[in-house]
Length: 242
Ligand code: ADP
Ligand code: MG
Image (cartoon, rainbow, N blue to C red):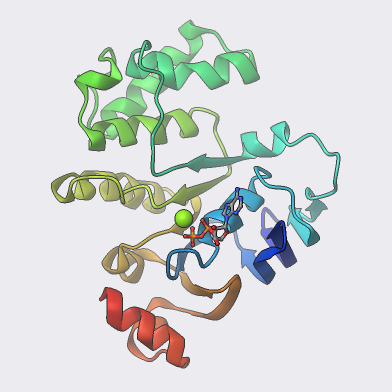
């Protein structure tokens, strides 16, 4: 139960087929890393998973229920499947805490009072205890990205999707964001990441999927993908990035 299952998912933009028949099973508590060249379809696949993009064919099942039927309200699914992007897009006129409170106030009907304590604990846990009342422009990129993660977690999602969330950060700020993912991993959060952080994927992923032109060309445990890739294209990609 709790699995997110993709069956033969297909997605085209106009006449450009971007996701070309992807099967993927995300089990509860698992961390899956999507790797692959720019344009291979990682972002689109993640966006399909929480219904930011409608799919053209195939199915997406959450707890065995088809969430990809056309016309279905995506909002309840997006509450269960949170997503964090490369660009953190915090509201500049709201403090970090207010940013984190916004979605659960609007979508879960929670009050500021009931949200304050659990969110304060989360800010504390992720090293931002003294930054809650700061505005985004008073925070570093790494701090803003951690706030964006807290904002997504504030909806108490069951699954989290992360799309290259460290790619826009200065190198010295990457570690503090990866530490948050490490913490979530240890807490048993189910996670799917598109990432260029190969060391991180090797350290923590249960499964690494190499995407190539909208297909999963190769998947397996990190040691297998990184140390003994079967496919020539996987080897070529890894030799460019490792
Ligand atoms: P990745 O995240 O692996 O770099 P993307 O999923 O962003 O790959 O892109 C895969 C392909 O889909 C690219 O060719 C990209 O140009 C195309 N694409 C992505 N989003 C859109 C869109 N909204 N409209 C048209 N084409 C898109
Ligand atoms: Mg992308």
